[in-house]
Image 1 (cartoon, each protein chain N blue to C red):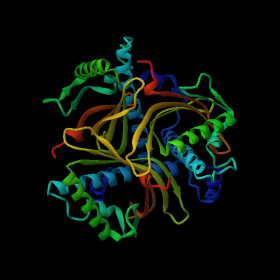
Image 2: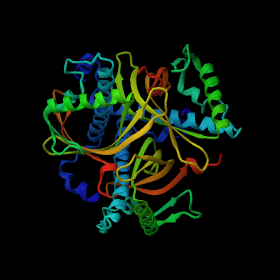
Image 3: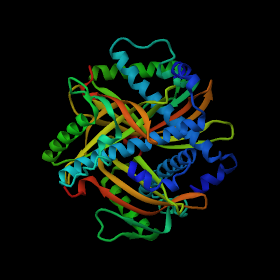
Amino acid sequence: MTVELMATAEHAPHREEFAALYAQVQQFYAHQMRILDADADADADADADTDGEGCWAATFTEDAVVELPLLPTPLRARVGLTHYARAAADRRRRAGSRLHHWVGMLDVRPRPDGTLHTRCSALAHATPPGASSKVLYVCVMEDVLVRTHATWRTAHRRITRDDLASP
Amino acid sequence: MTVELMATAEHAPHREEFAALYAQVQQFYAHQMRILDADADADADADADTDGEGCWAATFTEDAVVELPLLPTPLRARVGLTHYARAAADRRRRAGSRLHHWVGMLDVRPRPDGTLHTRCSALAHATPPGASSKVLYVCVMEDVLVRTHATWRTAHRRITRDDLASP
Amino acid sequence: MTVELMATAEHAPHREEFAALYAQVQQFYAHQMRILDADADADADADADTDGEGCWAATFTEDAVVELPLLPTPLRARVGLTHYARAAADRRRRAGSRLHHWVGMLDVRPRPDGTLHTRCSALAHATPPGASSKVLYVCVMEDVLVRTHATWRTAHRRITRDDLASP
């Protein structure tokens, strides 16, 4: 930590400013993951919010790049994200399970260009109707967040899953 | 998020003020859930704290209303909460498991009347003596928090469990 | 909560100051647990960071004391911690699983001497290659944190595991 802190010391925000950013990012992930799970359920209920504002893809920048563990190339821009999320929702609907994402262990590094480099753990539970919840996977998310229109959005994301990591 | 933020923009607190509220609410839930789990254990150990201040019910307002997934009508006021928590503790004692609640994915919305509308995920693990922990359920908690005597308390709670949600 | 808050009221920090501490401690645990898990993996990959700064033991004070559930006496100082962490990494390497620690439910109590008394829940998931993640254990961590060189470090830790608690 010492090394990393020194490296960014000149851009280190004031203590209260850091707390403000940290709270905003926690709220951002709570929102982003909630609508990811809700989009899937809404899709299953055939009453998906399609106005583009409430949907998961809108929490990413227009030109966001997302690197996912099982895809050979990164997903580019919102159109790819929307397609990917809908396909995932389709799979879950067929499986009959409700998905619940959980983000924690948040590390926030403000950068001199005003972006935030974040690293967090994400946990997904799947719950079939009337049955016990099961851990689906544990992964690490590394994001670059940018502020647009007073809202943070993900510009770049890299996901590493524990079950797919090299041993 | 854009829409919801605009709707409350005129009551949006200053960034540092939001961080202060967000930290307070995280601390509040850590405390409320800790004594919920501790009350259950204390009950099992037959040395329950009965002074009414340290107990779980005291983290709710006198006239709190709690909507729980398996109950046909909401629980009203602390007497109902205390009765419900004790019955749950009894069931756990008989089952021999230790319960551990976890709250995360917190969303905090300050309202013009000074209350906080919060939404979070809650996870419960049950651990039998000497055995592995198991996920008991994943749920969503939506609270209205009010400040009384410099302390936040739950005035209204609605719990939705993933395993009991309509498919 | 009322009682505990009153007891520390004279040392209660300003709201924004509390939020600053709370965010710092969350970031601290995210860092400490990340390198704990990374040290284990690095060890397994035979490219462990051995410069003493990036490693887990450096997030403790030189004379830290750690009380662990299965050890008859507390671990003392960094040498004990390093030895213990390497032994644990060895066991995990043989078991072939990736370990992922998660900290939450954080309670932070600033003390008049400038230390922080914290209490949090910790969850560990183990993931074998290509297989589902499993909950390994749920525990409670009670720390005394001290600030040295602008960084928080653990001076004392007591861990209580749910599966090893008296019934």
